[in-house]
Amino acid sequence: MTHILIYSYAHPLRRALLTALAGAVAACSPAADAPEVPAVDGEWAYTVRCSYCHDVPNGMGAELDAVTLASYTTVGRLDRYLRVAMPHEAPGSLEDAEYDAILQYMVESRGLMPEGGSTWPLPDSTRLQTP
Image: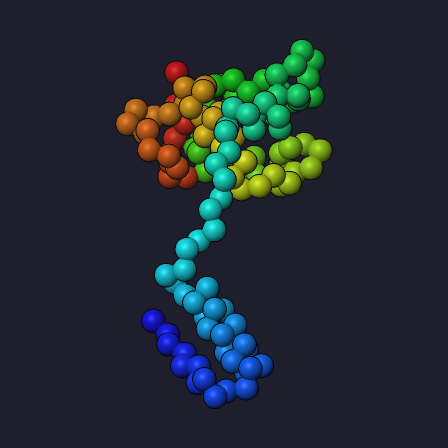
């Protein structure tokens, strides 16, 4: 823990500067709390970001059924594809939390979780299993 002693006889401007410096040092310390990232509902994110292409008759995107998703073979490959190529009109434009939630939703809702693979996030090497 870093201590900065501020002398009472210091000039008010110097005292303010030292106080600000002490706050900055405390904020950068490893013990500082990380900002909270709000949770994203995967089903909602998929519905808003993906379904308008993938879940409509004659849609632009392929149907995202278990067989299609399992063709990526691992969670890591599917995740990388989503982040690089989706959404089609603006690849890579979603927040990390949205990509994570959509990936989890698709893997779980299509029954692609391997047996005993209930802890999320799954390692990238986890093979996608067709039901």
